[in-house]
Image (tube, rainbow, N blue to C red):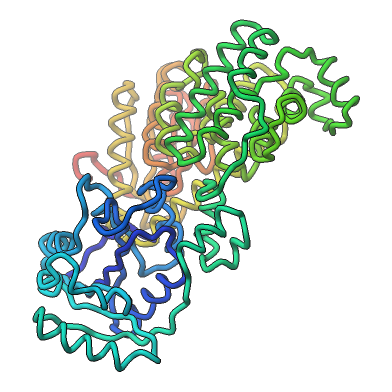
Length: 537
């Protein structure tokens, strides 16, 4: 799914499908596909209701959740898009107002409003149906066995509201939203319940509609008091910080806050154990110990903590237990809850020593995958610097998140025209130039190599007078690309190297000591490229 405001062309035919989508199901998608094909529409825009005037929505699901479920559901449909036009309104949303706004915003577009035959029956009770007909052609999805009755109603409304109505032949997939929500709340047959796999995946990941039974868990207030007697004061304060941070991230990423509360509160339940006690506990209770964990027994406190959570405090949800187990090293394909506890452990308010902590805190509320990758990258770098043991799982986890982030970037670019991509790359070159120029980088050179190589579009070459300046320049460039959701494919060299290479795909940054730049003479090697003045970009 692409951003619908990209690459706008004139005279498009746009289908509009609105609704509460609580949740979106195969019936909605089938109607949209029928309209797209039968009427030769360019696109279908899904517009989830924010505050519909005619329907009370259960408070257990938010408008944001419904929007995100739709976004997931249509993610693999190249002609389906989503708009938050009604989501951002604090008042009731009326169809005639939405269509008027769309026609004013996109005056050269033709709009086709999709409804089912049941909605057509009550169309004359809608607010200002004549205005709806003024701004859009009405497409009515009709069952083949009910076409005659629907045709009569269409003729009646066409005259009454001076509108254009078109019937779509569509064999409906009968899905009861009420029954569907009941199935989802009971975790019944999600993959075959009338929703596609993308919808099911999002609902599962965010525990939407699910009734989570925590009645047998030890109340978290009692756990807090117990941990206060077990943990050191500083560790206990950290634990509360992680709990509150996890709750905040749960609100941000639509994960049940009680799951975040228990995961954050119990993540360090075994932190008071010594290395010997952790090994002894695992052996006694037959918990697996890996070779890495024998080398670094402190890594076992997650496993032991999960065992304590389950057997002492009656926390039985495997998703919470896995978040406790993996909060130190992470793991490839972490669940959203696991990521939340992993990130909360790193960014909670009492933390203050980690590099670029403020950047990671900000990123955590913007893009959790990137924040996770930043934490893993910095952790691995720190452990290397002090020659400490690095668990292979941490490295594998970083590789995993780095890959999925770069996949998302490539997928997002598929919907852009080549001109838009080139302009985006140029903007990043300008931002990098400014950032490293602010750090007093020496002799910054930009070379356009797009016409002479498939390696990249641009080289940015600069020098530093000393290792500290080199590191500052590197960090400044890296920050710019992180802010664009772009991670390096490859980094070669380090603070004390004469040459550091940072490969961002379209842009490769070469940072040198002054001696290293003279020695490697990169400008001479790439003299077939075109040296570019920053003001000409």
